[in-house]
Length: 258
Image (cartoon, rainbow, N blue to C red; front, top):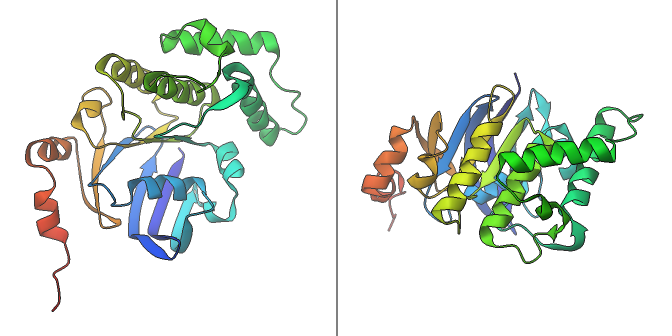
């Protein structure tokens, strides 16, 4: 069973410390929800896990099945089995969804076996159509340029389609619900639920309980001031929905020293 372990993680951006000793463990088969006020470091956590070069880890560890992730480049982390669904996916004009996914899939296969000649076009088309059917996507979608002219919902479904095709071991969804109407939200959530299971651990970053009505987390964590300060079951998200974050600020804000 794959496990992502984060210990005492400190991360800075341009010399400013954002994460200040964060601890978290995610195992395959578990869904974790990360919630917290704006600016508390949720997206910083996701980028640090994936190795974004602008985010400097100054202290702590990110381990995957005991292996030091900090020694690996972003593409190496991806091939190891990590996936990040972006809050704002980037458009790539001139590269179709199908070509992008086949290239990414073959890169992962060759990382596991250098002699792998890659998935055949016929097998790939069959696989891709099955994944698109699961996400209720028109097959013509595969011929469009990646995220170019896509609506917000189409971009998020394209992210989940990537996750379905690449079959990661740990998936981080950075505010995947942002900008989605209720129908698109349900389709994306259904896709995540269909993919989650014993072989996949999921970290969902969200501000809203509405996503968690469809993607049921086992654990909910509250981030504040660069740390996880509260962890519990789904009832914690319901408390935030009812009471907001004022009680978190009152409980964990550092007193002002005159």
